[in-house]
Image (cartoon, rainbow, N blue to C red; front, side, top):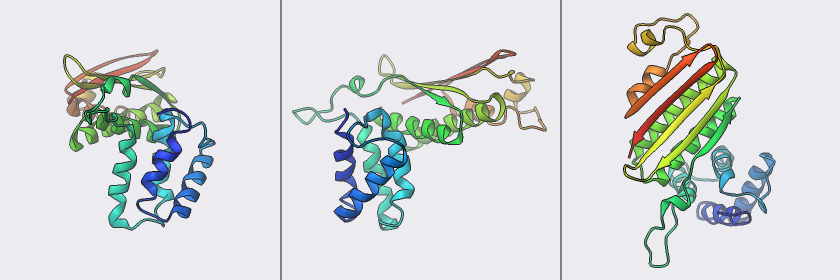
Amino acid sequence: MSGGLVGPALLRVLQQFMAETAARWVLRGTVESLRLSLDTATAADLPRIIEALEPATRHFVDPSLRPQMMAQLRAQLAPSAGPEGTATSPSAEVRATTYLVRTEADASHARLAARMLCEALGGRGYECQKVATAVSELARNQISYAGGGTIQLAPQLAPKRLLRVSAEDSGQGIPDLERVLSGTYKSKTGMGLGLLGVKQLADRFDVRTGPKGTQVDFELWL
């Protein structure tokens, strides 16, 4: 979705759930609060915009209709239909993207992007929730113990459809990694908490850690 098309696409969804004037006002205010422009925003900005629209629309939309509205907003990242009504190749829409994680807002952005990418790949609800939870845990650890890091989301369509997540930081590493992953490690600081949960959510999991940083890779098969 190129610049100039994001705004109209989101506006069409919002107008189904609120008055046109309110929809335009909410959308413009939300985009500008993110220091973006409706004229230049692209698909890369969608996760941030959609996440910000959730609270921004709270007072304008019937609570019973909000889940439907948010589902339609998130569907803007799904593969589009071709001229014969069949889905176009997902490879044109889903690609590896790296997110810089420094703040809680960055973590929320990466979490939402992971969920939306999973949905774009055809993942089921519980699968996409697993991805979002794992990304959230990894991002929280990066912020708390390494001053931040990066999270890469990499889709694979063949021979197996999956979503690969790689989280890297330049912190001091995770002490007692084997005990952390076995569930027997009790840390006063909480260091490593959530890592065992990520391992349990993953279909494939690998972690490498040392004094120069930590890298965690996991896959979820869809």
